Amino acid sequence: MTGGVTLLEILNSLNLEILNQGNDSIYCSARRLELIDIILGSFGLLENLKGWEVSSEPSLLDRRHFLFTLEGSLPVCLIRNLRCTNWGFFREGVKGRLKRGPEMNMKDEGGLGLAILFVQQALISAYGR
Image 1 (tube, one colour):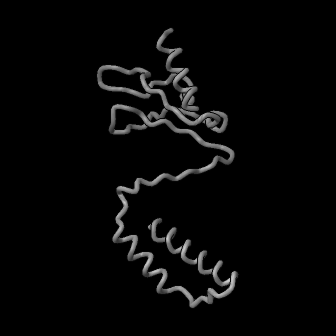
Image 2 (spheres, helix red, strand yellow; image 1 turned 90 degrees about the vertical axis):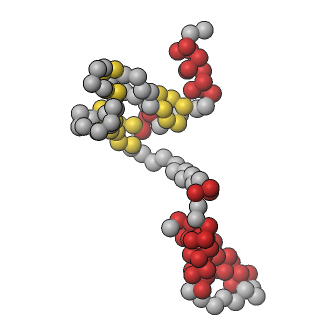
Image 3 (cartoon, rainbow, N blue to C red; image 1 turned 30 degrees about the horizontal axis):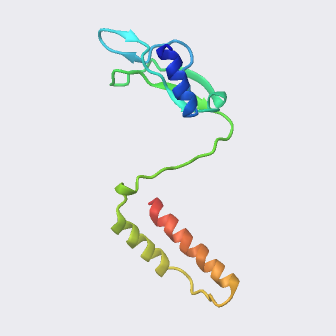
């Protein structure tokens, strides 16, 4: 089994595919110009990738920028690293939002539903800052 076949099997098992298009070099240094990078993306992304090109603009790095456009609608999944969260800032944000909230009657189902929605929005807003 060759290295290329093994790489393709690994990419398949992870639902990834190679997004590079064309054969323009991405990596460039004073001594060499070669294509050594592979750009990976989730399976199915390639069909929405349009206008792939390697930029000729200077990037101040040893690699050039690659440009593309995504067409169609793709699901977005934002991931946050909870270890980097400033929890004190978060708590103060939640307290401030809850203090500014309206008085709510939680004795019936409708009032309880509104209160839950308000608390949920306060948590999301505070975390998003």
